[in-house]
Amino acid sequence: MKKILSILAIGLLLFTGCTSVKTVSTGLENESFLEFIGNTTSYSGGVDVIVDNTINFSAEVGNDHASRVKGKVYAIPTGKHNISISYKNNVIIKKQIFVSAQETKKILLP
Image (cartoon, rainbow, N blue to C red; front, side, top):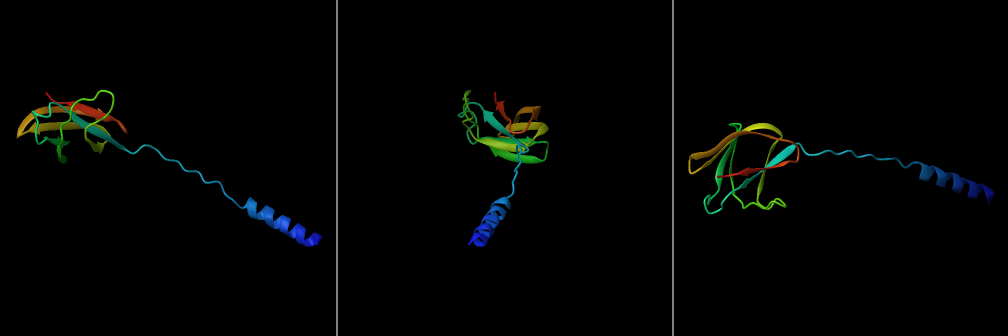
């Protein structure tokens, strides 16, 4: 009887001692975001955006909500970028911006 209890105790110690520690390390996604702010009636249908002459997309224009991001945001890579924004084939903004990881850059349209 003592042998059975000692074997069970040793087996239980070995079974509980075989667990391993798992460490997970995650970081921020390497992307940033653009939000376009302006008079929604002046830019009906949205604006056309060109980033570094390689990324082209149409963007919705939202109203400014200073406390939080309310409008639609568009993901771009982090770093320095040349952006060109046009409405009905007329360039309204052309400038260079810098965005860091997980930053939402508000572009104010005239």
